[in-house]
Image (tube, rainbow, N blue to C red; front, side, top):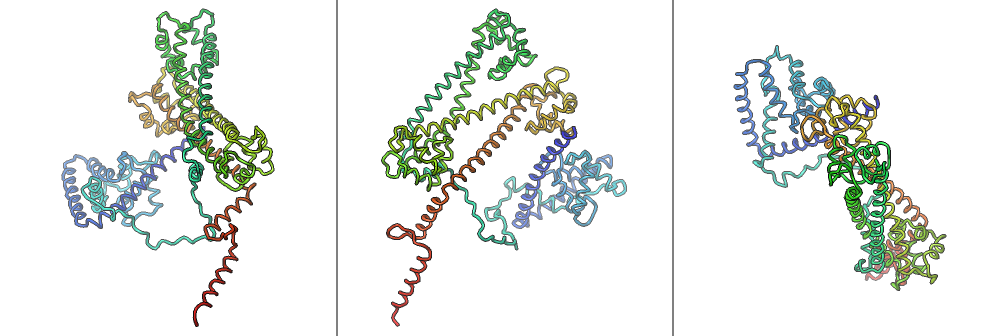
Length: 621
């Protein structure tokens, strides 16, 4: 419980920090715009000051008619409070409080307060420790700290200077379009006297590299990769495999549906009664998992007791009180349609990945095939896999041992013999297609494995969320009111789930001071309670965030592993890669002789010196 409380405090502090950061950025932007407007429109500023004084005079005349001192004090303090509530939230956060107190007038001091004085003042005002000051807290603090009974009700000028009020009015007029600033006005000023950073010698320059696909496309000698035999064959194979997979998926699902029907049909009557369905859901895990994963919203309603009768009525199309095989098949077909649609969506997501991978495979084949004779010789493979960084990176991406071994000089012959199925000593397009196709299949299997893992995680997460809902729902009404939530968060399992779920509105339910506002956020129908649909909507948001985090972590781990393999491949071919880099540098510097050999820098300096001596000698004395 102590750990849950600490985590709740951390969550609350993080949210407050984000809010305060946004407030500080807004205040800095407003302060800069105010300075610019003040410099450009000095006459208008005087007019705004005059208008602010007139408004204060009218306010004081109206306040004089108020009956009590408290009413008069509330009137002036509400004006000051609203002026510094920049985001109109009804509360003043720490940054807004600091801006309000910076001139010292509210604290009753003549000089700007120190940081310690501001911190102490905020602690005194923020009675409920929510991280923000409400007007009642501000009013009570001011009334006590300034001893208004003896000093009288101050005017607004004694709290907020007229210049500050005028600048705020001026800023509002600019945002309404009544004052204009051109691009030159909005140009940020150059820092004055900013110390220059010391330049570190030989500091590495970090250059953001283009993607491998972009770099290979720039090298490509192939005008249109879609015309490539390799790509056409692999895409055709992909289409066949995808269709076969969809057909097998449908066949397996229908068989599973028939199996589930038989599991539920306890008496072997060939029909399913409501008691049989409910008994199977309680006692047979396979049936329960099928209902959870079948993606049929009507069948899912059998998991919610108040909705069972309505679900049964919707499924029982002939109104005989039971589900026969035809009615079950109709439900199964709806589920299968949703599953196949999800399969098609996943396939569509894979298509972009496949196109990019096949384009790279086509370009890499052409890059290796230097003599463009349609086959890859051992010499061409040795050169490309030892000297071309982009070819090396593509081969590293292929999770096929035969291709990976091309990067290791010691295993090159073994890799060639495994890929060269016709034993002609070279790799044809068909053999390259077979190797690349096997790599692509493995990559797609990995992507599908990730999707299956996410799907299992989602089912488990939604199951836990439903269990937590039932734990909080003490009266079994399938709705959650404030009292049930306050009692529920004291249960360790409930609080642990809410804190870690990923939805801030659900996380803040564990913070008593925030429970009311969060209940308002979750209660979309505004009836004072959280229904199951509203709970499921909040859980869906939390699940999306969890899946995003899983994908980000997975991609990060894969990138680390790929970078490690790439570094190892570069190390194995360090000498040849270094030679290629030296040659490219020599070409840029013009250090290549007529025979194509690299001229050393020392030789270039010697030749330049001889040329200069010859030039000087040629000058007449």
